[in-house]
Length: 107
Image (tube, rainbow, N blue to C red; front, side, top):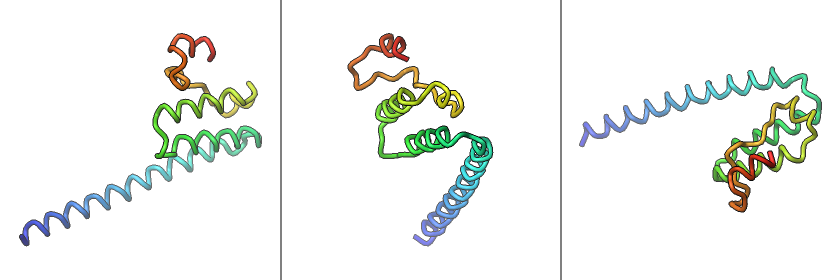
C-alpha cells in the first residue's frame, strides 16, 4: 500500500507540473494575441473579446460554439470582420435546419 501512495504522489506531481506548464503556454499565447490586437479599433476589440469568450466557454457544445460564432460574424460589419479576422465557420449547420451546402451559400 505504501508503494501505491508513492505512485499516486508521483502522478499528482507530474499532473501539477503539466498543469503549470500548460498554463504558462496559454498565458504566452494570450499575451501574444493581446499584442497583435492592441491597435484594433474598439469595435474589433469587442468582437475579438466576444469570439474568445465563445471559444473558451467549456459549457458550450461544438455545435453551440459554431452557432454563436456564426451569429457573431453575421452581425459584424465587413470591416470589423476583416480587422478582427473573424470568419464564419464553414462546417456549421445552423440548428440542424440547414444542410451543409445551404450554410455554405449563406456564408
